[in-house]
Image (cartoon, rainbow, N blue to C red; front, side, top):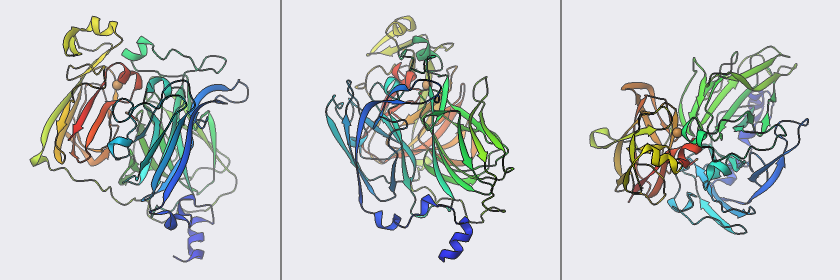
Length: 466
Ligand code: C2O
Ligand code: CU
């Protein structure tokens, strides 16, 4: 494409995703030093005091990491906090030793120490990184950041923006409410906050232009809050879920993004110049506006770009169901659940005794109270797996498998219109989801609910690929 033609297509706007340095970066190494440290951030605006947080380089979201597909990352993480920490690279199919689960794949990084992470992400897409030790507290205090692997040939857009969503539980003076061990949160919906933010700001306003084409990379870093976002009157197309490409489709309903999950959207801003659009959430009973888009007075272009928005298809090994080992995982427990007894530390216990120790949930009747528990699934490398997740609890659970993506095939025995790869699928109450995948990444991988209080309260296990 000639440069002039290109400028016409994009209206001459900035095209972040297509900088000329892209080709040069492939095969190179991106070196970063990141510090886990405390900081002060204005979350709810200038009328309130700054909030004391823990963040990567003292910010929320933490330092934004962008690589080009094919580039390696070398991140030296230094712990400036008073407590041990570790960094998990959520959704990246990396070598097990780099997965960042303290106590499983590495020792925790002690205060004052560092750990060098080094891997080459095999997939382009939208990912994130976060603490994986006492995550319900450390992520709740802000230890997370975006990790974007750019496609070598991304769709043409005017701006490629990360919208990293969080949900803070703040007191009236904007300080973090430190009730991280709340028993109610552990056994109910998790730590639902009172200040949902985008990129660390409550009620933020994004300035956009008529005709502008945006790629929005939504990342849900909340401890517990799931979102169902309504962009009307805009009509976004979904182009990727949990980092993996999907044939673009335009949803009729709100776009659901579970805790830990990601959704990539392409949206053309066609709304009255000068207007203010609300992106509202309706996942729970009380709807609210998460962020506003202010449409500027000056149109960028009059008719939509005609370039394709589809990403190149995902490159994952195709599972063969005729040749697969079947596993069923039953989620049970929690408030208003039917669990009466479960196995903990190898012993059957009643729910009362389990709850007394701070636990509330079980996978296949086993409470995941320790990281050295026997694996729930234990298979040799290369095994094709058919996996059913059956939620018998009263709450939704985003179930995250480390080191793999799993292909969603059907919901309650109804095939989904487009089977697609996910790493943090939301399983609604009484729902049964069917997946398939190839266990092609050796190691001990965590499989847990990404409502971080649920994980802390026993909703987790291990998948071992040997
Ligand atoms: Cu994003 Cu085990 O987590
Ligand atoms: Cu859960």
